[in-house]
Length: 420
Image (cartoon, rainbow, N blue to C red; front, side, top):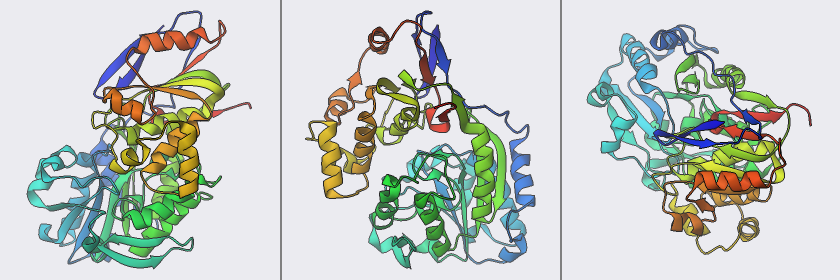
């Protein structure tokens, strides 16, 4: 059987002999909304939660947080209806600023802005990229109940109206993205993100969990301290087309959105697999190693201990994190990574190395990638040059008739074993 996997902006193909059943593990792929702009307009007409547009009439400053280039968000459909609604409230273009929420990623440069925002928006509105390492841009808003200090972009926090735009989709330890997360994480800094993400080691910090997830609920508290007023979120299918749009108070938007996301993303499988091939889902989900790790994190949920996982991720931007790269270089084994990370305590960047090492204790993994293989080896990623040869080698360790699991869109898939 020929298998096809998204890879960067292209597609990989490989063959699995007919003697091995192939299970293509894809979540339901809902049909897109027939008119995505109308879907967004409907969401803006029916705000969730206790809020109304009149609350924003005549606002003197409006801040809109949008995700950076690592998150595929259909801004061309989400933003124009939102901006029209703000204009109808008497808010001039000059009062509106877009903040690109990069989190601890490097700031985006103006020449990169067209990759995420339509030209007409760039021509009419002020757009700035957050820089988490510039303390002059930050303001302190206190601590959450879990002790996370809240440092956030000052200009955004001081705006009269604060809006977030993005997607609701699965997140491997925050449960789900969406809602206030775009601002709470994307416009904060290491002093906030590190304590929040440190809770990923808690047992409740699970993919697809919301109400009991300490990471996500801490994010909700951060967003409340910032005072985010409105969330405009979309649920996308595998083709990154809008299925549903939701708008309103941030928490009801996420609570409603995650139910749609579960329907679009969850899939039951009959067993755990000794051999899995997984792709993040193509560009931009495999833009770098930092993002691509999620494909392993999702696959490991259904990997048999001692099995094999092949990750296919183009990673044209390499590791994606100087902190991750610098900390990992020089480590000789995944066991050393696990030991050093636990001894030193949680740190953003190194946590990505720990996630690989944690999952590598369950199953052996290999990375098929375009990134520099010397760097990939130094990062303990086990790069391979011949995808088909590695597949054939893994198959040789299976019993005839044993199924192979394929996750073509792992980052947007929540697999679970239906019968343990």
